[in-house]
Amino acid sequence: IDQKAQGEAEERNGQLTKPPGALGRLEDMAIWYAGWRGNPRPEINAPQVIVFAGNHGVTAQGVSAFPAEVTEQMVLNFQHGGAAINQLSKAAGASLDVHALSLDTPTADFTQGPAMSEEEVVVALATGWDAVDEKADLLVVGEMGIGNTTSAAAIAHALFGGAAEDWVGRGTGVDDAGLANKARVVREGVAANSGKEGLEVLRCLGGRELAAMAGAIARARSLRIPVILDGFICSAAAATLEAAVPGALDHAIAGHASAEAAHGAVLEKLGKAPVLQLNMRLGEASGAAVAINVLKAAVACHSGMATFAEAGVSDG
Amino acid sequence: IDQKAQGEAEERNGQLTKPPGALGRLEDMAIWYAGWRGNPRPEINAPQVIVFAGNHGVTAQGVSAFPAEVTEQMVLNFQHGGAAINQLSKAAGASLDVHALSLDTPTADFTQGPAMSEEEVVVALATGWDAVDEKADLLVVGEMGIGNTTSAAAIAHALFGGAAEDWVGRGTGVDDAGLANKARVVREGVAANSGKEGLEVLRCLGGRELAAMAGAIARARSLRIPVILDGFICSAAAATLEAAVPGALDHAIAGHASAEAAHGAVLEKLGKAPVLQLNMRLGEASGAAVAINVLKAAVACHSGMATFAEAGVSDG
Image 1 (cartoon, each protein chain N blue to C red):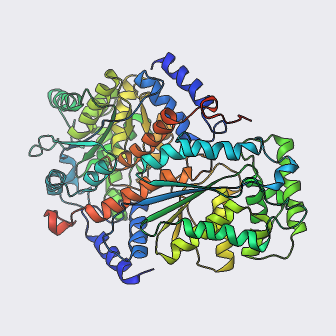
Image 2: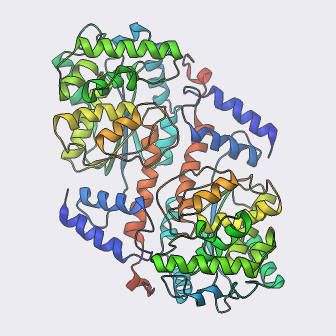
Image 3: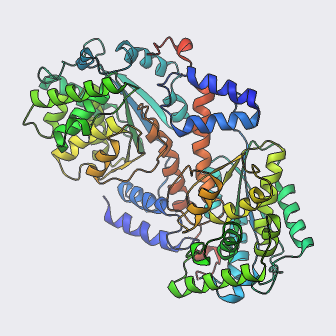
């Protein structure tokens, strides 16, 4: 982060025509954004949304309410403009890119061993890395992948401990028996890939779209592009970066608290407070895309408002 | 509300390419909006933000951290485009109108009797009524008025009981002594205007900008224009409508939970869950203006997404 720009943004914030702190979280968001952009009076003109899609061998264990074909069907829906993220990207003034990662070759069932080989995870990470537009001034990443809440739960269990049951939720809508089955699969997956840390957890329990999200988030850091994290799956993928390099997510905020049960716990582990709590649980970057407009509002106030001196307003 | 349009919107929502309920609060918002607009597949193209400004005789009791001149100074700031609400309206694609109500004639100090005469409150209500653009498809109202958190606290105390201390907060930033003083003023104001109900509470303890907000919200109802309520002062003004006619706010949602202490309690009394919790406490319609983009996102998903049949996606 650019301490000088951040300090200048803080100073500017104190002079704007409002009582101190009256814009609440918007003030913090604008100052954080200014620091990462190295500009005390920044603008957001080119947000980029990227959705990565992948398939999961673990669906063989019956962990999802939807069949695996839906991953590819939804990719076509993204391409034809019919999904939620198409509408939300447009509403946020953001570009949308969709990358389908080897959908015909699902990852291996991680209850039997690593989900990906080293080569596979590197290709997925690089796909994410290369997908980031260098001209973007804000990045949101999301995913589509039937079975991937199970993958995310396994990652969270491996990184943060506790019981498998602590990390599983209903995903796209499994029943109580499905939930118990997911916990079993997560437990077995972590047991079959024990003793892993950081990006090895991503390789062994993640999926291609999770690795791609991690690659994109890392690339955004190198380009000083701030990131808004989406829900449970995005946050779990991001958490492997933080596990590998503490502070690796300082350029990211949490866009929302998902209704997926364990998301709040992952955000707590990451020390990130969600901007929105709208009970969303769709993935596709949808929650973070809604949060883009909140960050835009924050930055618009910060950079567009008059100071007390400029406006001739008494400052109390 | 148009039950037929609402029912058709609910049916459409169930067919969209997402797991049931996965857009959370966005789904409820879109269906509610569709019902009030009488259109199962609506759009939001013309949101209107109106800020009303008024001055308060009760400032003579030393209830604000800012001098009363700031009301007029901020009106000029609104007119010159330098305030938060200017940036937020622009970010929401909304028009912004500002109405200053007799700033040279503050309301009477309500610790001594009614804040307004019947004629005064009627003029203020009519100003609000007439300010609503018949072509608007969404209304947000807000206020500027040094001293008006004290007025809002007095309204809440009169409508909802409890102790004066339950309803006062720090407003633009009073200290502990200031807070105790506000509680005294609220207690004395309610005692000096006892036995009032509904709009009489608005007349006796409100202010011109609060009455104008109530008038605009009522007018929006008659035009079937949905409303997003702003913070504590807006919600207190709106609560007098609900007290006068139960259900009078069914066309309104709560845009955000303000950091002003008693706002949450007022929303609870009104049975409204806030869309945003961003710790904002500025007024000016600022919190509701940020929520415009959330409602726009909800409606964009609802009306723009493909159905399972249209997209050829298996629906589980």
